[in-house]
Length: 97
Figure: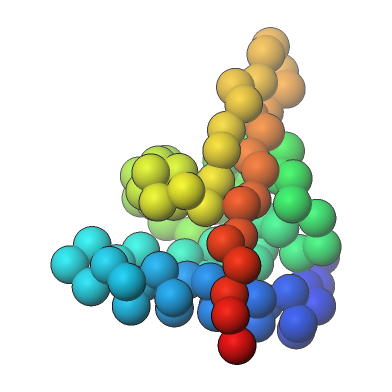
């Protein structure tokens, strides 16, 4: 699903603010495209890691990158059950312009 450019800009701004405030522990380089892919229009993503990886992300690093985004406060995760994938929620901090 294509992402609205304004949405991508909001994500990029939030990541930039975080990285500026945390220069010794910046987010993964692919944080903006990953978040933009997962949350093109809504703040909820319920896709499997395989589906997300199919969008061009390294499957081996995907889980670690998602954990890093959770630790940074950008994501929360509710485990799925059975065949239902985990649910991720996006938490973008407000960015002062």
